[in-house]
Amino acid sequence: MFKFKVLFFGIVLIVSKTAVSALECQQCGLDGPEGCKDKGQGEVVTCGQENAEEAQHILTHFYPSLPANVNPNGGYQCVKATHRHQDPDPHAPSFELRGCLYDTKKNFCSIANTFQDGNSTCLACNVDRCNDAAGLKWSFVLLMVGWIVTQFVR
Figure 1 (tube, rainbow, N blue to C red):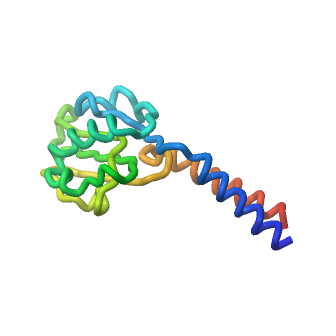
Figure 2 (cartoon, one colour):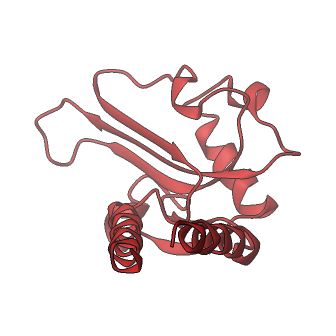
């Protein structure tokens, strides 16, 4: 029975690695700082040169050293960067961007930014749709389904 479990997990691992074609990310905020408010989580896009460069162009305004940290010959990552000003005015400017970005030499979230006077959050990940809370929820559900299946295989 142990051999069957090892074989099963080996096949699942191989299939999951070969079936994955390209990274998918939520994308919004590329058309302006309020872009994610109107579109919710944004649209799902497959990462590629065009959308990675577009996100990099916008993020460079807030992360000036980003171009020096980008690895354009590598893979892609999903990113989410937000900044909310401390101003109590609900119409105070805010920023949110979700999208694809080239892999960076160091963690994207550790790159210095120019945000001031507010609350900033950052997320960088390399799993499909991981820059959206719902995407993480589905990853958890799939993990639990896998665990339940292994309990029945015993």
